[in-house]
Image (cartoon, rainbow, N blue to C red; front, side, top):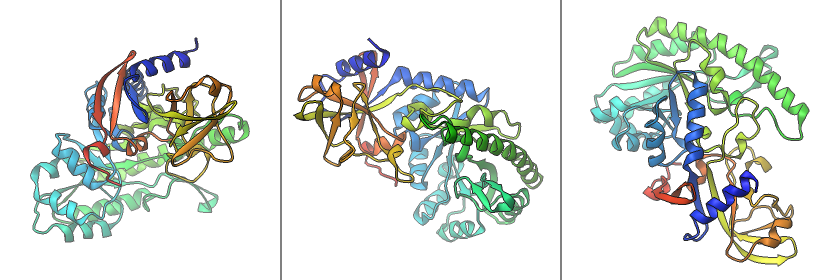
Length: 400
């Protein structure tokens, strides 16, 4: 029996009492992945990206382990909810236009001390100030650096379109603008190198593309390490008491941790290891989060149909954004239909061994987005479900 076949047998036994659709997290794999992130971070704390987990119980499980400290959230409403739930260090990774949320933040000392918000434009400070509604608490500010690699005099750009601030001078200027305003305090710098951390460099069947990605990423790492260090020096000249410099992502943990200027690493997808993280040479994780759909039809030889399963991930549309049938091994989509909203035909010889009601296990393309489809996650240890915990959705929250 292969390792994957053994996992399928375990998951089927553990969930025999549960009807599909159902989602699980294999805690042994989750914990092993957590240990690997800590190892790769080389002694620097790992801040957990909540959007890649979206389950309070599992955020708590990660933070209870040595080597993890703090959360990186994705909306202001989520940040405030997490802070009210007892999380004491929440870094909002994206600018917000949530005026109601800012009014709550600036009126509550507990929230203001726990939540740090992201800024890359003075207009965002204006919005926060206008939203205070009498709130007097000091707002903790993190400045975000554009990490994109610019080539040929800026005519070629590689990287996500995030912050407009690219140079040390631009970052220092915004730091000065913040310090001149009463009620704001610069406490951190963030630089997320998504073109390194979030792009696989070993795509199966595409050796030339994979080599090109590796060359690009090597150049990007060198350029960013030098520029990030200069940015931190420039900001510290304005804000000597800067508390943290955040960088990285699951795919670049060890590279970013090697930079002296970086004080902490952000990662979250590496806990669940969705399918988009199969194509990396820098690390190998264990799939920890899966979902199962039930077989409801047997249309013919070599074909079964499962209920639903069409759960595409965000990003540029393409086959890599689709979940993949994982267990039993050897199933594939019908190219004429793909994964559907209410039914999904699957082709392959393993289909002939599946009966009505059997489970087919899938892996989502991206980590936390799976939790937008399920109210609960069943936590599996060995061949048993040892706990069932709510996702954000299960607690009544869909923040985006």
